[in-house]
Image (cartoon, rainbow, N blue to C red; front, top):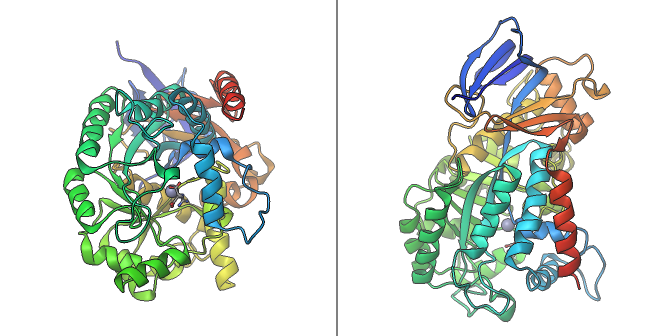
Amino acid sequence: MTDTLCLHAREVLLPDGWGKQVRIVIEDGSITSIVPQSLPQPGDERHAVLLPGLPNLHSHAFQRGMAGFAETRGPGADSFWTWREAMYRFVGRIGPDDLTAVAALAYVEMLESGFTRVGEFHYLHHDRDGQPFGDPAEMSLAIMAAAEASGIALTHLPVFYAHAGFGGLAPHEGQRRFIHGLDDFARLLEGVRAAAAYLPDSIVGIAPHSLRAVTADELSALSDLAGEAPIHIHIAEQVREVEDCLQWSGARPVEWLFEHAAVDRNWCLVHATHMTEAETMILATSGAVAGLCPITEANLGDGIFPASSFLAAGGRYGIGSDSNVRIDATEELRLLEYGQRLSLRQRNVLAAGVGASTGEALWRGALKGGGQALGDHEAGIAIGRPADLVSLDTEHPSLWERRNAQLIDGLIFAAGQPAVDCVWRRGRKVVSGGRHIARDRIAQIYRTALAKMLI
Ligand code: NGQ
Ligand code: ZN
């Protein structure tokens, strides 16, 4: 028997514009009909505004468990690198069930903020002592269990990590849970691909961790393994990383990558913060996506992405919650724009042109680029697509008297997450009145796991 749901909304953000008085039919989780200018029919569930759910293209879910624990000043100048030491200490505490507990809460919060798919850049593979689990995919299965419990769509990105620095340096102790050779990585990937077949709408990609963690030969073997699947890499996030790369190779990270890999639309370059004008142009014209994580980049003191020239050259971007120190889609988008405003001393930098709304450009940009990066190329409200939807609470004062794009501007720049009302994933309403339906249970499990991990 077909499971049918009919929604009716006053305004809907469709791929080619704003639909008015739209009736959407959803059968077994997929959209089968979209008819604008329709009257609601008896039994339709009525909403004021519907937006497509956003992709969150970069997450390390486990880091949600240490949110706020690395904000105390240390003896020297604190930096990305001192934060990383704190993060490595936390890594030592996490077992498979803990990972499911932490990731499930993170995914619940993502859904509550309007993210309906997550790209999990997953490198916590082995047991605490660095030995592989009996099933090498154990920790990936823990992530899949969290995706299933929350309902979020998963693009799983198993990470290849082999070295501690440029030039194939041996990994250090703190990295022992991450490490693979190419053969055991291929086995992991096989296990992950087999398991993902049982998780609806899941996609499996590959992630060479960074140019610090892979050699040129490994990188080319990994591109072969990826085939047409998404391939993600951290790059040029910190100035020191750029300096080390220059010293090692004579080239900057993005420059080096383009010389050594066929970077195309299957690629996502995460951060890409520190680029010259020439690197910005080559990335923008490659068709690859820049994976921007504004909250984490601010938290870690990374720098500001050159968005203005990147967009002018036709570059594609998406957003990611990365360290999950805060999980809030509207805040990521707001901070993306505000970083540009602060550095350029201008306004409406990311808007698509004269008379165009910044908020709508941000939502559409993150939808298109994030979908592409996560291997979900047609993300949006369209026939044949899973019904991954967000409704807004137009009773929120920041949305009163707003129409069309003004609603998204009101959401991103004024109301923020409190104006997110319901979220559907594959036609199932997983968030209602701003709360995930399993929040209490998942939060309780998280609380117990966290207390145990911190002992
Ligand atoms: C990560 N996070 O893999 O979690 C990294 C830190 C590294 C960010 N880059 C570790 N934000 O890059 O070595
Ligand atoms: Zn990352």
